[in-house]
Image (cartoon, rainbow, N blue to C red):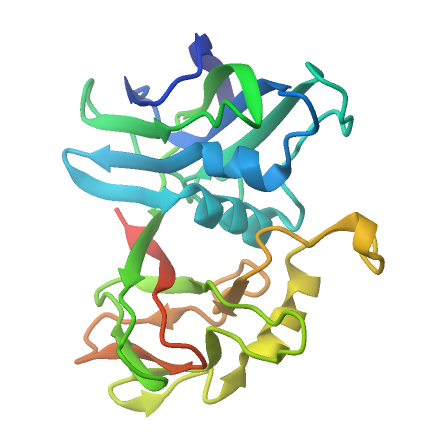
Length: 298
């Protein structure tokens, strides 16, 4: 098997814009998006850099392959690769160069010829990157984007990643959220706003269950408090037991994992189902961000 790694965008000056780029036509394993900046006065944080990339989308003939806000993409990277996105130069000095890389995946594992995006015709597959560079936190930014193609791959499926914003329901308690039907689901990612803080045990989503055909499936009753603990399976990090280390980022994400070993043993099959939905136990009346990671057969 042969691969080609090539630069799609080279040293582009970062700005508030939407970058559009047609992607290569060979089967794609993944993309690498890197934002390089200088500290503005003091240290630009990981959270600030992640937020500089507002949204990443990949469309195939106007159909969604990936559509995630940057916080959700960073969390997907943690889920898939078991470590934080790379951020260089932990230095607070003014004008120190720092770089953040995010991976845009088309399969649960990189370089997998069986699970990647299939070959396309020229102009069919397009990348959109929406950026806003916070001038008070960093400056003189530039963006590089690269693609990894798998020559001769003949995939049977690819990973589709999409996000839906669930509006505040108007009250605490149960809030039902519909999930797409037709593909196998590898995981559902829940990002909330409220997480426990000073003198509070409150989560925006206190608990969650998943139902298929109105029967509990897999996650019959799971508290956010314990799902946070599942981060041990997704985040490779030094012990963060003192305040100086800061929070693990994104700090407000939990997963309902149906591919805990990235195998097919526990995938949630939705084809033929009459309904698949989440039941969120809202601890706070607030918006919630749900990302669904599906495996689409080709």
